[in-house]
Image (cartoon, rainbow, N blue to C red; front, side):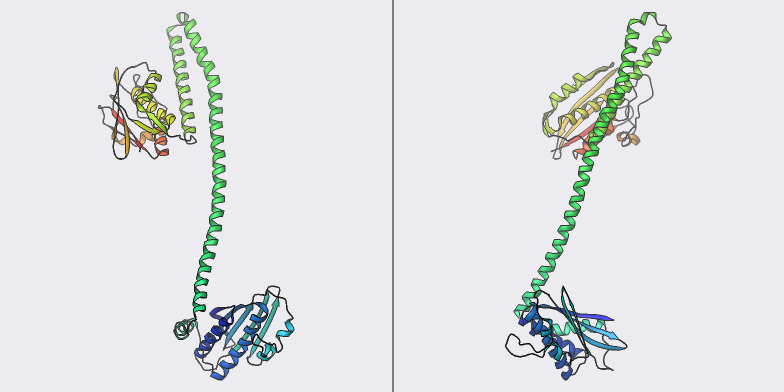
Length: 421
């Protein structure tokens, strides 16, 4: 079993001095005698000297090893493996930077109970072990933790060591940032691929909606036109029952055409890219009213409306749907539509009120969901497709806006559409 005590970088002669001082303190805490501490530190000193001389530095790792009920103090020195050199020289007496002869690794291994040398293309790993005295304190992780706290106070750290510790923390922070940047780059690439895929799907949806709309409208227009021609040319020759059947066909064709247009508007609304521009609501409302065709008698009251910054196509869809809804579901002979607006700190609230039958409060949220209609099934009230109000809600959400209503049975309805400033 191995318990790691510490790890120290060896780059300069100052690092060796600091390392040996640290090992002395740890060896003393482990219960080694002064004589054995000197032998162990001397052996490590020789290895570190050769690491500096030949390999431009390395890393020393200090551990406690437990094997066969015995414990050892272990030092593992890994060099950086930068330079090529004759490895046999390291095993002999080699002159150090100060010109004095050293023991070499061959002499060092006589000072400890265990030496192991591993050479590879990545560098050399040298392991030295010194047996701890029997009957002494059994070293565990808690013991090592207490050593670290004590030794940190005992050892006088040099300015170089303090700078190295700070640099190490900066390096660790840099590596963390680097790894995070790699993860972020990978996530961004994945997100970008998903965006491209989503854009392609949206384009497919737009194309599909237009193709389906065209394919459905073509035969429907033929049926609708043929029905109108027969009803016009042979109206006097048709029996009352046959004429009524042709009227049913024409009404169904008209409703089908409206349904296709509503489906197309709803299906393509999410893919529509809003372009903000200054819109005069007075002019736009006038244009919308002129385009609305209804067999009912309608009285419009339009108050002075402000200008807003919004997508013109989207605002036109909102006004068209809210106004036609008020006309479509009204149960009065004279339909009254009042269009007004108010400004507050949030923005502009467009109001469209009608004199229809009103909507029960329990349906106020439900009518903005797909295919929800609450119009009475009476001949005087036209049935809708259930797509108009969901489209208005989608436009509002797309622009961080909001749509809601206030209504009571028998008192008409007022729809509110918020345009943020």
